[in-house]
Image (cartoon, rainbow, N blue to C red):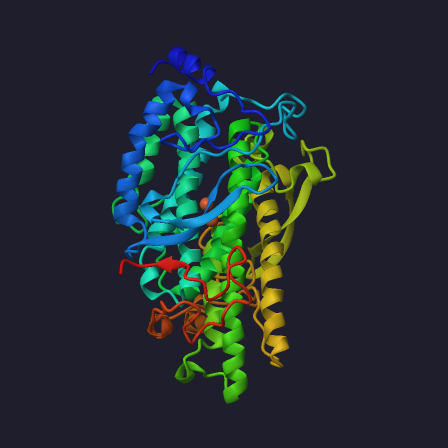
Length: 491
Ligand SMILES: [Fe+2]
Ligand SMILES: [Fe+2]
């Protein structure tokens, strides 16, 4: 497609919808973007839809179910957007939902600060925006693929339902990005949308773009750590895109963040319930070695935590990145909580400290803030991660135990950024490679640890019953009881 037709194309992109913007479920593709008024876009997306369903059937949840008690978005406004009901998984209404438009929205940061937000893609930023949306889009189906087998070992129907809720919403997040690709990026966008279904997690020839999304989700503890640490990275990335000068992207990400809150909940409470059960078994038997009693030792929970934290920290990219600065200055990506920050929102000349390894020690350096925005975001993320750890430690304290979980040092086990190639212990000590290698089995899960955890992953499909390694939740979903039949099978 030539540049001039492309401009016409982006010029006819759907108008921002009004503040009420109800979701139209009469459509083949539920949406609140007036898809019916743009036949060409509608046809293109309807052409992609069967490919998505194919992908879902091949690489979505592997365990056959009749229906699942799921929430579906019915409106994007502040007052009640979710509807709960039993839905056969393949009939879930994946759709396109953008947060309400603010017609007066202006750009909050960078060189375009104060100008009206963009409703179309400026030519000079087209390639960068296409890349940002593609990378975000690639993570969404990846996690569904990673979690494909977990239903077979769900510790309860309550947990299985939560897994499937996360899965369908990650599928919807893929739709969210594919809508932007189709609506605003012409043929290139459509080609990227095809590729999002062709790359697959862990595929030797055509893997997902980012490392953490090619790791196996081996068991439910890993899944809870993933939803806690890796979905939380997603939350922070979406937080920066929610500030974007490109308004359709900002509104898309704003609504995705509402769904993401449930994924955070699954991670926080999943780890918490595991820790509670572990604490209970430690108390009962007066030992840390609770394998024999069907629990996961705290030391192994710590190893899972260390691993998932480190791979998720890598997702933020290099601490120093001229690209991050460029994205900020051009208005594509803001900072977390941009409008709440008390500075000039332009950042020329501003500096901050950054830690790095020099001469075998961790030292602090002053660096230009604009170059260190990945680090700025990562610091916000780490502070958030600490909240969960505090909460889990409260469960240990409540059980009268003195053991505690900790976040490892930011430099531990890193493959990306300033710490890559250095050997930093979880306590933050720089050591020789030999010493590090000798102790690594104490710090991250060994194949034996994973096998022992996997051995505890027995499926429990009786309503209200839970596997022995995890505590029951204090309450059910959407005010249903814990005993509610959250997932139904073919009889
Ligand atoms: Fe997502
Ligand atoms: Fe998520």
